[in-house]
Image 1 (cartoon, rainbow, N blue to C red):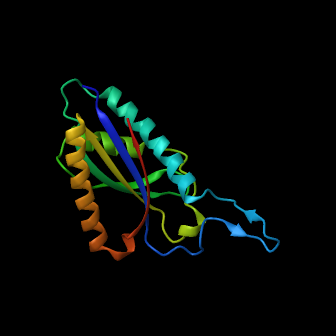
Image 2: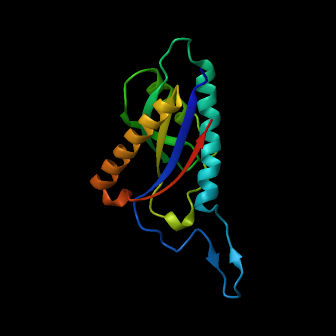
Length: 167
């Protein structure tokens, strides 16, 4: 059975946006944008993450259980690479946790975090892998609960930009 993969990449905003968006409006009414919007940033990063997860899926050994949820966090370094990659929660230890960490660690060319979210370089990643639609629904419910708990623990994490992709 084909594995259903959903990855969610979320930028954890530890401070309220410094502006109303990632764009600045010049005095003459023109929109000036030197950095990506939050949506464009998340779209770009989700594509990069999915490519790395595809690579991990291809290199998995037959019979390895690669189903479950992994939540990770990393900091965008000045050179556009992830640093301090940490698994913050996983539904079970094992191959998926290892693959998720490797995939995130291999990300390169991470664009600058949108200007409207100044004050943080932290990125939160949720990866959910299931072997069936029923299992995906179950894991998605569990992830929602985990996210609600995370938001309740730290009010600074209530503003999260996220994009889901599924195959």
